[in-house]
Image 1: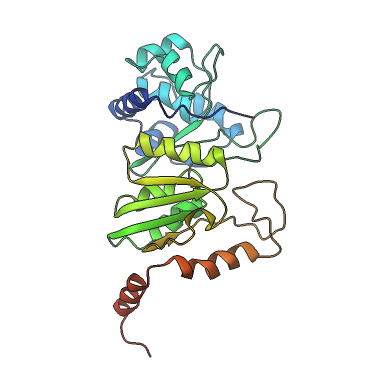
Image 2: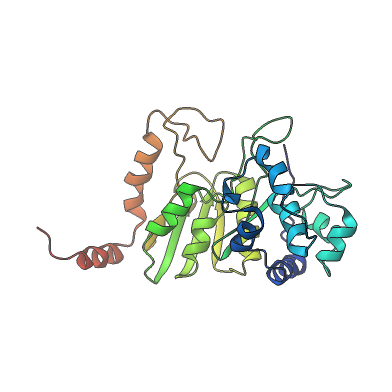
Length: 276
């Protein structure tokens, strides 16, 4: 299941899409209201159940069908409910597959708290199964990491292995500047699109492994939702570290000290109280 990159030069369409989705109330709360509290646990085999819950034909339901459930939607319906955005606009942007009738989204667009996040469609769709460069919108581990991250206002932050960009976008709210790194061009394209869709401008996206793209640079905060499978496998960039045992996380922790601003680390330790 391959998809082309999002056309990041379509600035006007991205901004208009943000306004349209806000106008029709495309939020996590409204999706749960339409599909049920288990909406975010949906897999492909749950979609027929959810379809039966969508009966009112509102603009919100059109957006849910197209972007959340990945269902085909008639172009007339998309043009009507997303006006002034047209199917042609979405095709030019790269959010729907070109030439397909009815219209089929090329990404999954998921509201998460106050963010809108684009990622791959359901991982088990399509004849090829899950692609090696699969990019999730938001997962339970990434949501937990976001709640555990220190949110003190600081000058700079680094997100290693940004994926859809969720950690970088949260950090951008309390940091003057953020650098987001990933080895995957697909992930970086989607992450930059997500930044633009959410009106966030202070994130710099760079391609590379671990700390290679920020050699010689230091940051006040470093976050990473690292590949979490302890395995030498390299099938999926988001999941597999590709090194023996937990060597990837070991390198991440060991090398991060060279990229942390010492003054900020000292101040953070002082806030913990006197050493025992």
